[in-house]
Length: 238
Image (cartoon, rainbow, N blue to C red; front, side, top):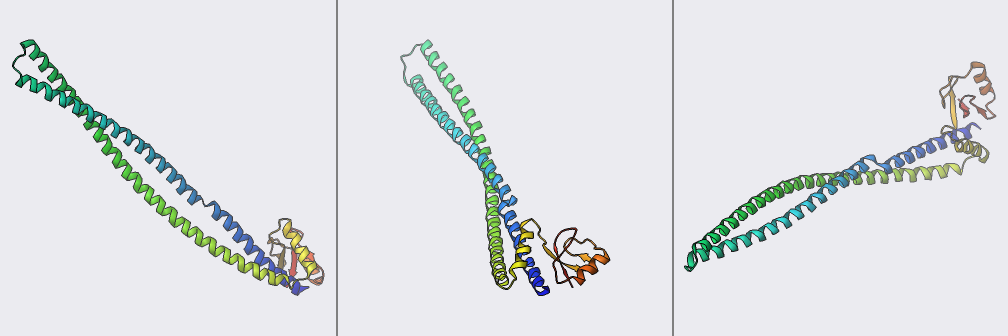
C-alpha cells in the first residue's frame, strides 16, 4: 500500500503541475497587457483617422480658396488692362472700374489671409499626425514583442504539458486501479491535494496538527486508507 501511495504522490505532483500550467495558459490567453496595447492602438488609429478627415477637408477648402484667388487675380488683371490701355472711358466708368479693382484686391487679400490660416492649421495637424504615427509605431512594436513573448511562453508551456502528460500515462500503467479511483474521485470533487504525508503529527495537505493519539492510530493502521479529518485527503505515514 505504501508503494501505491508513493506512486499516487508522484501522480499528484504531476497533476498539480498540469493544473498550474493550465492556469498560467488561461491567464496568458487573457493577456491584459496585450488588450491594453490593442486599446491604445484603437484609440490612436481613431484619432489619426479623424485628423486625416479634417486634413482632407482643409485641403479641399484650400483648393477652393486657390480657385477663388485665381479668379480674383484674373479679374484684377482684366480690369487693370482696361484702366490703362483703353482711352475711351468716362470718369465715372473709370472710377467704377477702379472701385472694382480695389474690391477684388480686398477680396484677394481676405482669401490670402484665410488660406494662410488654413495652411497653418494643416501644418499643425500634420505635426499631430507625426506624433500619433510615432505612438502607433511604438505600440505596434510593443504588440509584436508581446505577441512574440506570448507565443514563446505558450510553446514552452505546451512542451511542458506534453512531457507531463507522457509521464502521467507511464505512471497510470503501474497504479492500482482501486487507489487510483479513490484519488481521482477526490480530485474530481475539487481537492487539489487529494493525498498528503503525515509528518510530525501534521497533515501536509492542510498543515493542520493532528492529535497525538489519532496520529499514532493512523500509523498503526497503515494498511488501510486513512483520511485527514480537516481536509479529507488521504494520509501517507512515513
